[in-house]
Amino acid sequence: MNYRETLDWMYVQLPMYQRQGAVAYKIDLTNTLSLATYLGNPERQFKSIHVAGTNGKGSTSHMLASVLQEAGYKVGLYTSPHLKDFRERIRVNGETISEEYVVDFIEKHKSYFEENLLSFFEMTVGMAFQYFASSKVDIAIIEVGLGGRLDSTNIITPQVSVITNIGLDHTRFLGDTLTEIAGEKAGIIKKNVPVVIGRYQEETVEVFKDIAKSLDSKLHFAEDLNDKTYTSDLKGDYQKENIRTVLKTMDVIRDQGWNVSEETIKRGLGSVVKNTGLLGRWQILQNEPKVICDTAHNEDGLIPVMKQLSGESYKNLHIVLGVVNDKDLDTILPLFPKDARYYFVKPDIPRGLDEKKLKEKSLKFKLIGKDYSNVQEAYDAAKQNATKQDVIYIGGSTFVVAEII
Image 1 (cartoon, rainbow, N blue to C red):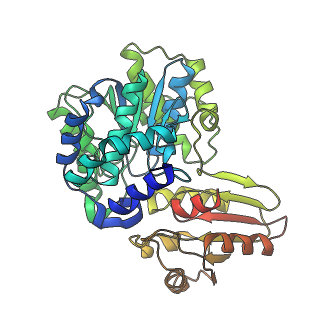
Image 2 (cartoon, rainbow, N blue to C red):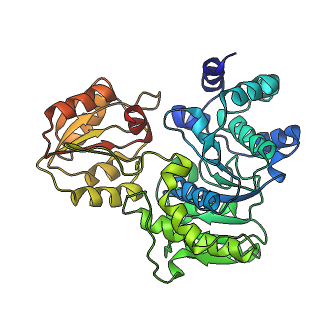
C-alpha cells in the first residue's frame, strides 16, 4: 500500500472517533496494553508529559514542546485530531513523521491490528510511541485524545501530568457534571507523579485534591503563579490561561533537573507556530477583509473566542459555521452574535451535522443566513459578500477550519 491507501485502510476498516463518533469509542485499555506489550513497551523508553483537559490541551501541548525544543531537547509531540494530514499527529522537533514510516508501521503490524480489532486511535498511539522510542527523544508531550482514565495514551508514567480545565463536552462518555468529567480527566494522575491543574474551579478542585492525595502526587495550581508578563505567537485571549499552565509545568520539571531558563521559555512561547506547526487557534488567514479561524467547538471554548470576536472592529460580520452532530446546540448557538450574516455548512465527515438542520436550529436563536453544500462554497460566498472593512470568522468545528486552512 502507498501512503494514501494506508490512511484509507486505517480510516475505513477500523473506527475513528473524530469521524464516526460514539460507535468508535473504546471503553477500556485492554487493546492498548496488549499492543504495547506486542511492540516491546516503547512507552517505557522515553520520558513524557501527559496533557488532558476539556479545552486548551492542544495549545498547551504545543507550547510545552516549543519551550523544550528551544531548551535544546529532542522533543516528541503527539496530538489529535489533525487538520490537514494525519502526520500532524506525530512530530519530533516540529517535523512530522514520514509517510514511509506510517506505511511501514501499518504493513508490518497489519495482521495484528486485524486479528485484535484495534481502533484507529489505538494503533495511532502505538505508532507514535514506537516512533518516539526509535527516534530516541529526550521527552515527548502526549495529548490525551478523549477523557483521560480510559484514553489509549494513558499507559505512560510521565514526569508530570497536566490538566488544563474542565468543561461540559463529550458528556455521553465522560459524565454530565463537571465533577464526573473531572474524575475521568484525573484518571491520568499517577502515583508519586506531580500534577498541574491549569484552571482552579470550585466544582472540581476537591476531586483533584482527593485523587492526588490518594496517589501521593503533589498538586500544583497554575493560578497560584505570581503575575508574569509572557506573550505568545498564539494570539487568542484564551492563551493567557494556557501560558500560565505552561509556566507552572516548567517550574515543576525544572525542579526535577530539566534545564529550562526564563529566556528559553520566552523564546519558546513566542515561536510555537514556527517550532511545532500548530494551526487553527485564532489564526488570521488574511486582512481586508480580515479572516479569522478558530477550532473552538464547545461552550467552554467558545465563550472567550466569541468575546474576543466581539472586540474586533468591522462594518459587517460574516460567520461560516459548521458543527458535528453530537454538540448541544442549545448551549453553543446562543453564544454566537445575532448581528452577523451566517453561512451554514456541514463538515465533510460522517458525523457532521447537516447544514439545513443547523440553519433550522440556528433560526430559533435568531442567527440568520443561508446554507451551503460545502465549506469552500460558503467561504467563497462570504469573501464575495464582504468588503475590506468586514470580518469573516470560520469555526464551530475543527473540521470546518481544516477544510479552509
